[in-house]
Image (cartoon, rainbow, N blue to C red; front, top):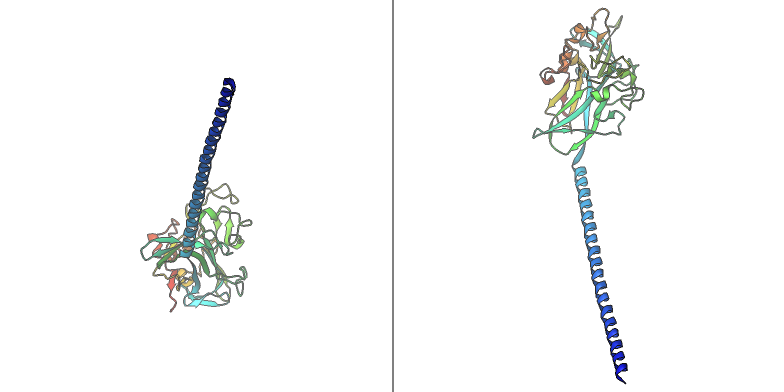
Length: 334
């Protein structure tokens, strides 16, 4: 091998060695990339696991909330003194005059129900929305059954409000008698139940009758005498237009009853107590029969409103409605 051939051989050998070195370096680089990919995959897996753990924790929290909630059936009773309300019974001894009274209707809206714990914390009762007598935080109590004198009523009755609250020890209950302003001035024809009853509605401007108690007084020549409690002083362009501001006389009493056990007690609405100071044999000439909540009905309403804790002059609670007498607690053993 001459000198020229030897040099050529050496150059070829060097080129081959260089190729081997470059290939090895690339392979090492690929391993690093694979390690990065694996690390990235591992990190992603960890993130997914963390997310799954967070989701599981959230689910557990939801389950805990569900476990803590308890369903309560708040019982009400329509009474006339010591007697259960009936559309077919003639009652005596009501009001300041002993005149026979027959009832034709007895319905009332309650809302914003709250239970008070032994530590004085107030808890809102979340009402069952699958109940046709309940909507949002509102419930209709219906004690008439369309029999006897109650020909303006419905056959379906309701004396229970169903809702959930934390499972705790409760010692008091409060609720409003009436429809909240936000629901009070809707069109009854298109409203959801129980606001779709024309018998409980005045008009868009006036809203709903929070209490409807219709009677006839006397035996030989019965005359009507009614209690229709609702907001007054409601301002809008006309009776077919809902107000945008709260009415000046809300007439929405807040009833608070201490010593109430929601598991066993019943709340009584006693019409004998409501009418205790009323003369049902008289009515102001030219006015609607009984107390309809409107101005100019001092003779019929002034003595009745305080039994709900209300002032007829202002439409607001007096002394926090604490002096009301129409609602009281009936224990399970009474």
